Length: 236
Image (cartoon, rainbow, N blue to C red; front, side):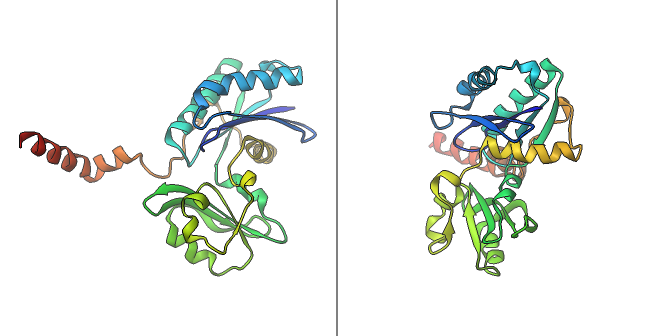
């Protein structure tokens, strides 16, 4: 069994393949936000290293968000194209849910992704991976309020960098562990596969959780207001 995992929701993209024994090989993009350029070549490197073909894959797992809107679209497009071309099943993985594996007897887990202006995509998991705060869009203050009930939380996600001044004194994960990665996608996908949680390529959908900023402005009328202000400046 071979499952390909794709993770492009963060600053750095990665791909990995896991086999039936749990062994994982992976590749990580060399530059920030270079997902589109490097993703397919990295996948080719992995199958060559394992001595298999793309047709030898049993399923394709992809992190569908939340996270970077552009990154999510790149990952989904790649997974859908491969699955359709190769006639493979897909596994949809939430990019917050994959941090559930970090919870253990010593630490609960909080994960926050920066959504700007004090907003985050976040979740908190208990020592056995149970949800203390369900994955979703929150204000940072909301996540911090829930976390105050516990004294054994370890923090992950790019939000710990963006909001470092708000997390002083907290137990922050090591730099190499902070970000989401394709090996985590693969391990989560294995559990989903065992539960029969598989999809056709056309069923893969993004989990943005929030609208892109331009769409949100259009929805609540702010985009029209901004355009009107710009037009007034041009007139003057």
